[in-house]
Image (cartoon, rainbow over all chains, first blue to last red; front, top):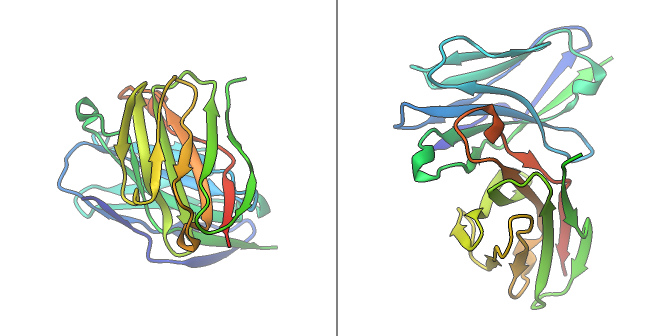
Length: 118
Length: 115
């Protein structure tokens, strides 16, 4: 079974600075997908960014980017120019790429609580 | 706009009672999922369905059941509620594809308290 580990229960960052959230995972598969979800105090789960394992290029979405190191099984999220609205729980998630077997479910890490200091 | 809704948003019940949490999506997605979120555990998969009449057990399925009679709905039933089932429950849905359209979309969550 796959496991996802987020080793930082809490992080803080000054407004306008950059912060990196860590995620490592364990899998024997070569094809899979990785995600970062954001959960603000409203509790809504919001997709931040998605990475396909077969793509070597790191995904980016505006101020959010990832550092995907497949060999090291590492998938960190970098938030640039942090804003007050970035304060939230962030979850890393893994999904098998074996869609022929119907593997669409996500395995989540335990989350990192990010605080943004004005 | 397509959406995924959950009801009720908050529920308080007593130990031993049967409880059903509703999930309804208008995305016309094949895949639907139920997760529970507990402090220190992240989100854990309870049950999932990849189509009408299809249901599968997830990591923490004991004490829960689901049924899928149509595409839009996947109700989650707690057969006999226990205090250990106090949690926040999330429903999600996704398309069946191998591209970005299979991203999971989440409902707003249901906070369940079992006394």
